[in-house]
Image (cartoon, rainbow, N blue to C red; front, side, top):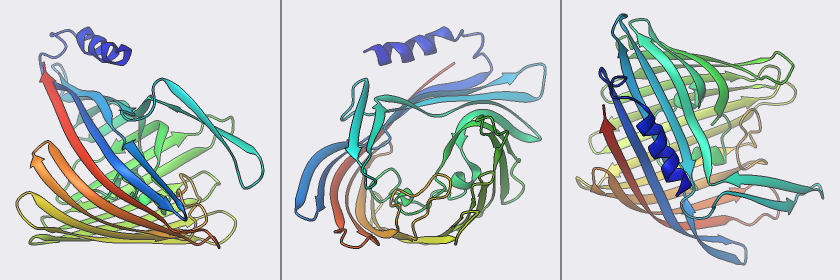
Length: 333
């Protein structure tokens, strides 16, 4: 209830005069699935919230300048498990106790920026250009089969200063710098170049983690009638040691005006540079699913994921999921 009142209070605080020459929206996405997890002899049934979110976004034209102010404030909301802040602890492989705190309400992309003929500049918390460069490659985004399971670089950074070029033909570029604010005066840099044509998409991304390695990424998707093919290559290179390669490939087929079959395979050699992969010691994930659009804003899906690990004597992990995704938006001036 307090969170709802908080969102309402924010929206009410903006005057109608401020929105006289702009577009503004309260929006959100609720993504929940029923999952059956199997690993070895253990089976667990649970309800999972997959990056469900609520936010406010908009833009305002500056009447005295050929510029537009753009903003977004977005929060993740766990609609299945957590209320307030919860802390869990476990004993790691090193024999030490590791604690982790999670909040029902946590920040996602939140920024303010200015857009003009020169492009856009934004300041705040945001996905890095490398993360953005994958476009819509990931067919199982926010699910168990998300590419962040085996590939590093899926980073949403704090303290981002970013510049986005205007679109020139098929090209768009993004450059971002991220001060570490840890006393070292180091600056993380990230850049991406994206080429979007009618049936073909190509994305190139690069992150440099200020003396802590780098990640390079190549992504492409291609549409051929009802079929969409995709491939992604990811290389995570520490400053000391060998580079870890990873890649993913997928295919989706529209079976009807509302249905889509999806398949995705990903593998990584223990990519731990920057925002490291969830499978730290290497492995692969195979995902297959079917998605059905109930309406423009609502879809139902079924999916099956299998994760295999390079760590010896670690059993495969499989997940059966049935999920519902609903998006909503309320526009106002």
